[in-house]
Every structure is written in structure tokens, then in C-alpha cells.
Image (cartoon, rainbow, N blue to C red; front, side):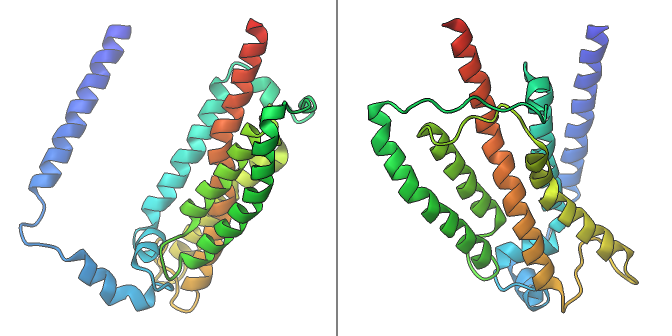
Amino acid sequence: MKGVLDLLVIVLCLVLGAALWWAMLDLPSSRIHLAEQVAAKLDASGVTHPVTAVLLNFRGYDTLIEVMVLFVALIGMLTQAEKGSQWLSAGYRPPPLPAPPFHLEVLQWLARVLVPLMILTAGYLLWAGAHRAGGAFQAAALLAGAGVLLNLAGLLPAWTTFRAGMRAGSITGLLFFVLAAAATAAAPHGHLLQYPAGWAGMLILLIETGLTLSLGLILAGFFLLLSAEASDGSDTEE
């Protein structure tokens, strides 16, 4: 049975490779000036930065799929974890943090200074994404980095449970995105994620705000949940 499944996977990969090869050959031979096309439609995108216009408007469906992939990856990690049932238990409470050793005191002081600045910078990146480099992914990565720093400094325990609030926060951005896609597709003469001209800027900001929260929790979860598993494993070995 395993040999049949392996053969099926190989065949599917070959079919996919052939389809991609044919698609590349079928591309138009003339040069496509994407920068000029984006610049021509930038005024209708709701933002003034071309990267944000492409990611959240012109090809928003692609960004939506990227967020789905990250969310599914988090679900898969929780499902495959050795103590997934304990992590998903809403009634479980992590043990209190032990007293920090002396060599962590400087790191803790540094974390207390840097983390508020990281949160403030993440808010700026979220706001700045409409007109310059920045946006939800950059802001979320900074928030996740703040969580990792707090954990390494001993100020934030590893996530031994993924409680209801975390689950709700991790899916908020994806829900905003899906609702925006459904609303634009259901509108008269509407298309998927093609925002009305007067609402484009506000909708993009709303989606990016939700994505910042969700992606921050998801990216932090990749480290903090595995950190709990690693610490449990080391305690068991001792």
C-alpha cells in the first residue's frame, strides 16, 4: 500500500511540474511592465505604497492564502504535539515562573526597556504600511519577537496551553480577510477583494490590524509552544 501511495505522489508531482512548465511556455513573449500597471492603478487602491497596494488589493487573494497557510501550520503543530491535549485544555494553568538566576537580571532589564519600544514600533509599522515600507507582516514579526525575548528573559512562560483568547486572536485577522472577500464578491458587479474606491483604505487598515494581532500570535506560538515541549522534555530527562 505504501508503494502505491509513493507512486501516486510521484505521478502527481510530475503532473504538477509538467503543468508549471507548460504555463511558463504559454506566457506572452512581450515584456509586462508590472511597475507601470501598478502605478496606473495606485490611486484607486486606497493606499499610496505600491507594495501594500499589491499585497492587500491587487492580489489580495494570494495574501489571504498565505495567512491561511500560517494558520493551518499552527493547527498542525498543535495537533501533532505530544501534549496537544494538555495545550488545548482551557482549564490548564502553567506553573509559576521560578526566581531568575543572576545572569538573567540584565537581560530582564533590557527586555523591560525594549519590549514597550518594540510594541510601539509595531504600531508605527502597521500605520506606515499604507504609504511606506511596513505593514501587518512586519509589525506581527516584531510583536512575535517581543514575545520570544520575554520568554528567553524568563518574564513570559512558555505556552503550555492555547486558550480560548489565544485561539480567537489567532483567527481574527483571517476572519476579517474572509469577510472582506465575501462582501466584495457578493456586492453588485463586485469581484473578490476588489474594494470600493471610497472604502479601500479603511478596509485595508482594518484587515492589516487584524492580521497584525493574528500573525503575531501565530508566529510567537511557533516558538513558545515548542519551547514548552522542549522544557518538558528536558525536565523529563533530568
